[in-house]
Structure formats: C-alpha cells, structure tokens
Amino acid sequence: MASSSAEVTMGSQNHKRAPAWTKWEVSDLIAVWGDESVLSELRSKRQNANIFAKISKGMMDRGYNRDPLQCHVKIKVLRQADQKAKEANGHPGSEPRTCCFYDELHAILGSALA
Image (tube, rainbow, N blue to C red; front, top):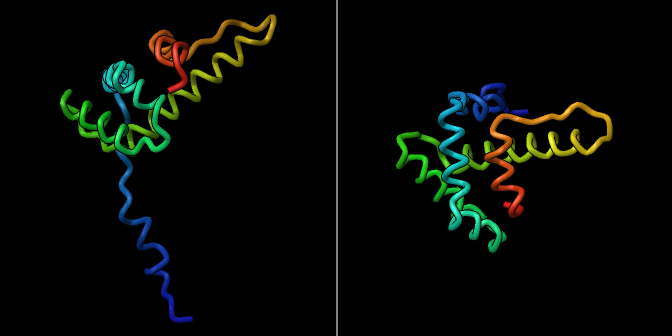
C-alpha cells in the first residue's frame, strides 16, 4: 500500500464552503431564474449547464459572486422547499405551510416546471 493519508484528504482540503446566501441574494437569484428567457431555456433543454452559467452571469451583473454550480444547487434547494410546502398543504386538516419566497417560487414553479 503506497498511498498516504495525505493523498486521501487532499481533495477535501481544496473545497471551501461558499458564504451563506443572504435573503437579498436569494431574491435576486429568483428574479434571474424567473426571467422568461431563462425559464424557456430550462423547459426546452436537457443539459442545463449553459443556462446555469447564464444565471451565474446574471448574478454577477447584480454584484454577486456565485458560480453556476452554486446557483444550480440553490435553485434545487428552493425547488425542494417549495415542493415540501405543497405536499404539506395537500394533506387535509394540516396547518397551511409556506416556505421562504413561497409566492415568488409559486410564480415560477406554478406556471412551469423549471
């Protein structure tokens, strides 16, 4: 066995956790994501890497520094939160539930599966 423990941990040392998303930043991400041209591309294409690059650029234009993967992951998390709220609200007798940015997400996700 020639591998050292340094080789095993090397990959994880290069990953820095991105700063937490602020409420304003998420709001701007939703605005960029909700743009009709972005939604149209998301609906029509299978591979969305270029679209998330476009969303990342839109965020940079607004003064944020988020790469395409960070945007993709955050959008995925927002979709999941919206889905959980919808599922919880689908059960009779349950308390109405929303998630942060529920109305904005519903405007995007309610009109089209992005």
